[in-house]
Image 1 (cartoon, rainbow, N blue to C red):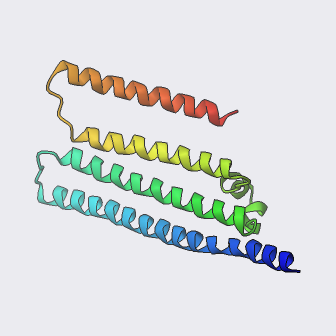
Image 2: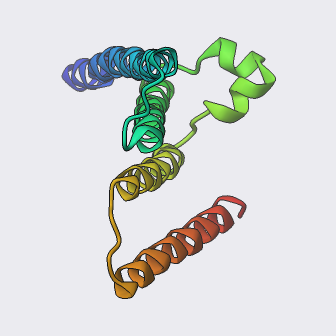
Length: 170
């Protein structure tokens, strides 16, 4: 009797993960809103620059960096969504609507912690790649050696992404 009561309490305690699901979704929504506001800010900045006829020194770099920064935030928001959906499916219940949809069953279906980890890891790698290119936009290369390091870092990213794609297709 005591064992049955204790096991029932342990089993129902899994519902505490609903906090991670709720706040993960809130975090994703906040990131989507902030990223969208960043894009809006870039659009307003671009429009105002065109209207005034001014052409700031690093105009193109600022626009691209702003948009890449927003893409970075969107990707992090996607990580939060995948995390929330995955945790919900693993600990609470399968999401019925996702299993009824063709695309939903492929994108958001999580059946193990390893699947959740793999999906999140791939998006995090993309976040790092986008963040790398955002930082490169503001880097000034003076020597040939710096350019060589830059080329090698791009090659390392390309090789890493290639192997990441190979692992995902197994």
